Each structure stands twice: as structure tokens, then as C-alpha cells.
Length: 124
Image (cartoon, rainbow, N blue to C red):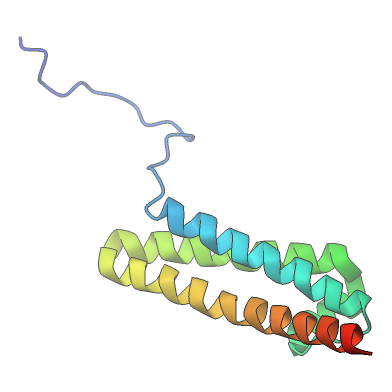
């Protein structure tokens, strides 16, 4: 009997396949974390949340609620990308790219608002 024949192996609960888009997920998690951080800085400085769902979460549960909300959204997106990516790699890559792009808009907008606020304070 050769050693190249497949061996019967039981797959355990913790034997999960490798994640498909790890680098993209790292960027997505970074952008999501920046969104929470910058939102909280803006709220601390007297601004307000424009997303009605996030605003409701923040009004009821504060920063801890906002963090849990964002983590749940992030996990949902990663799981969706994994499911879609196992059916169609191209569609999974597009989905994770779109998720990063969409999540980058609030970060860019927050940085713009904070920069403009900083510039106004410096000129007065």
C-alpha cells in the first residue's frame, strides 16, 4: 500500500477552512475601527451621528453599544464574503472590495470634518 492514498480522517468541529480574503478583511476591520473611533471623536466634540440606525444605538447604549453594533456588522460582512467567495471567487472579491469602499466613505468624511474644524480653530 502506498503512502499517497488518502487516509480516512474525521473532521472535527474546529477544523475550519482557511479564510479566503484575509488581507482584505484586515483592511476592512481597520476601516471599521477607524469609523468607530472617528465617530466618537466627532460626537465628543459636539457633532452628531447622521446614520439613523447608528444614532439610535448610540442614544440607547453609548460607545459600548456602538462597538457591538459595528462588530456585528463587520462579522456579518466577513461571513457573507466567505459564503459568496466559496461559490464564486470573483463575486467574493468584488463583495469584500465594495465593503471596504463603502466603509471608507464615513472615515474619509469624518477626517474631512475634523480637518476643517482643526483649520477653523487654528485661524481664529
